[in-house]
Image (cartoon, rainbow, N blue to C red; front, side, top):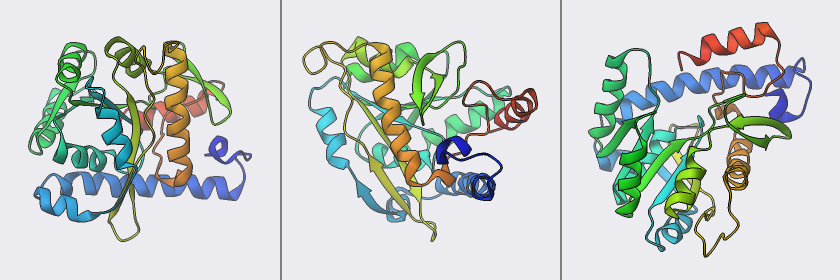
Length: 255
């Protein structure tokens, strides 16, 4: 939060924002379990505002499918559910140490007609989905220091997965950043940013680093709208102390 605000981490406003993010994450967990127990009409009724749906429509026009990228922000499941009301969606879900937990999330998503494939086994299912002009969902803000694509994020270098960019460049699928912002009354505002194009016609010089950087710029803009709704309990940027890395790993491994 100090990096997001551009302030020293001992500032009271930084610590307040950090505490708020933990509270907001708890709200997300409760909403996650509740949303998958209600019908589509009830899900749709909680989404009171949609901004940028025209970007989703524009991204489907080339016919190469759409890669929908989000972050651990707000309620990314709400954005996926909204997308799933209109189009077939396949999401890449993180693999937890316990197979039962992976299966639980797969079943929850399948109940709302969202296909889920495990991280590490997602390439072929995603390629097939994009070939059918469907949507693929990816959460991109997973820090991969020493093993990812380097980008500038909130003014500091870090590394994130390059899978979305590689998938887009290979298939020509545009990449749309979006998410669901939770309002105080428990309703949601869904937003989507202009597509980052990856095909040879619209982006003839696109490369993995350039596409990933463009995507992360939109992610940065989304987080800046409500930074307390960004749940980054891992070490996002290199250079933190050993104690901070241990705390970040311990919390992040459970989230």
